[in-house]
Amino acid sequence: MVDRSLRILQVSPSDSIGGGHIIPWNLFRSYRARGHNSWLAVGSKRSDHRDVLVVPNHMRATPWSRFFGALGQKCERFESKVPGLRRVIRACEHPWRGMESRLGIEDFNYPGTRQIVNLTPQKPDIVHFHNLHGGYFDLRALPWLSQQVVTILTLHDAWLLSGHCAHSLDCERWKTGCGRCPYLSIYPAIRRDATHYNWRRKQRIYAGSRLYVATPSQWLMDKAAQSILAAGTVEARVIPNGVDLSVFHPADKRWARVSLHLPEEAQIILCAGFRMQTNIWKDYKTVRAAIGQAAERLQKQRVMLIALGEAGASERIGEMEIRCLPYQKDPAVVARYYQAADLYVHAARADTFPSSVLEALACGTPVVATAVGGIPEQVKGLKVSSSSDARRDGNLYGMDKATGLLVPPADVEEMARGIERLLEADLLRRRMSENATKDASERFDLQRQVDEYLQWYEELVQRAGAARKIAAGIR
Image (cartoon, rainbow, N blue to C red; front, side, top):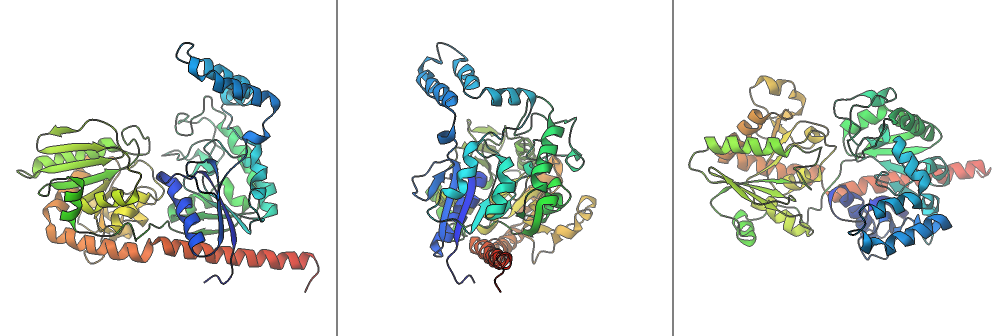
């Protein structure tokens, strides 16, 4: 329990409540509810909250860049008549940035970064950074910033560890220096292979920094410990993300379906994610194919796949209906879809600790997911007799604890078999639902996450204060 009010500044690309941005936003609001001074500095502001502050990159621009920035705004209406005009003007606005982009050098030219600690009315006790890619932050400021104030980095992906990519898939060159990158088009994409230069630049930055590193999963922490980030890490902790259990909780399935105008008698499978069909980390193709196979075997049963967050027309394949629904801003509406579903299915090529899996579990919806990244730390997979499961035995549990099924990545047959099994076994599915609700309340409550961060903040602030007294010669 933290006895005094802390001054906490978090830094994130945006204050939107979608995707990974929901984590700092939830913490920001929760700290305020606990009586702490809490601010959120962002590259792009979406809300009207007065304590959400914008990193002032635009205010410290040169007269040259301000001129071409204003010219670009005035010329927007001519873009349809003169294709490429805005691109040319943007290149003139930041000529050095444009040259680096053509060379494949990561963009760190954000001069407002050094003003972050001056944005708040009082100097913060803690500056807690989240994703630092996204076009708003100068990574070169970390050594200086970490000398000014206690600096925490929470990794939501592996970008800080590599020469450019947020996840390296099967490539392990991030351990030894990158270069000869096989995945230049992976987000954040670069035009040419400057990955070794980018990697070395990050290595020098971390070597001069004093950073406290957090990850939501042990999987990502293990990667961080083997990476260039380790040289600048003073202390590291695994703090799993949480979800708001006042929003994401079990509810009457019939009520949820009626309120969403969904068929009461259908077997409903949910998958969720932004632009799943084009997102390189997701594997919607495997989800679609697996559910199609399962639907064929479940004869005379109506099966519906809801793709939440995916634009596109609905379609019917045999007895299966695929209904694509746009992204929903209201978390209560999102929760209702989990509550209405019989299963949540999550296929990914890479994933750190997806919030959608936590939300499903909190709503008591069993999960069928690929065993990649931090997902096996979220889902307690049912132990079944198959050779593929033996390799993941450490992540598997009996019926009394299992919350879903884990399958190998890109394995349509295994996923289809898991979906089919759970849809046919009502008793098993109900038991998994009970297990999921209990496990989420114990491990993935947002308030538990808040408690862990606040306790760590307090420890670090006390240590910093003691170190200052020693440096000043005060006993």
